[in-house]
Image 1 (cartoon, rainbow, N blue to C red):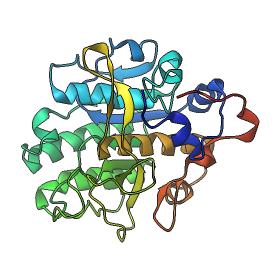
Image 2 (tube, helix red, strand yellow):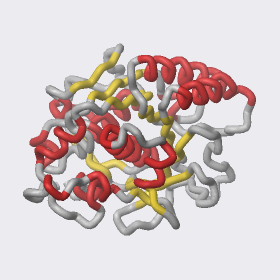
Image 3 (tube, rainbow, N blue to C red):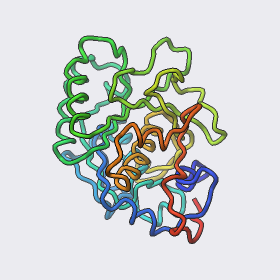
Length: 287
């Protein structure tokens, strides 16, 4: 599959990394994904450490979750062949199935979305996750109906967690500013060229907005197949995975320091070269 590679995410310049480096680096990582219910029967996810509380439904939210999980974890053979990205292979992914199709498509009320996300966020932190990624953007962030989620985000930050959300797939001129809440990291998409994706909402002047690859990302598809997809939700998942990999290596660092290390000025694009250790370099993974 001719999409963005794991080595691109980890090393930007395409420097080789040994397969064992990924699982060794991610063994203690715990990432919460608030999405639909992933299909754990997909062959790419077999043997991975994925915790969920629901069976997958036949919906776009379930397919979306399956794809997102495979961006974080997946078997080594599929990763080597470029069928999935598996950035954090060896990590434990907690899949909280709270997102439904109405939320993904912007048809659910803010109040209902806020309540579902707030409850799942608290559960994720209680489960020991300190990196939590939502699969849907937060629209109309100034609405009072978000109050319970804003309170949950502040509580999560007090527990040492960070919340990562996508900027949205509406382009630069859609009239909505990405969520500016303190404690929320908003992720827009860039392509392999390093330019911001045309579909990605963005606001370079907001201090909580960063960018990660979100175009032509390989992952687990419908019918136990594989596909390339683009979107800011996938950029957000990859940004969250990179942050968690760095966090478990630098447990004494505060979140602002970790974010500043990975997303460097002036444009705050993901610079994942800091995740790779020189003594782990061995052979190129042909993804």
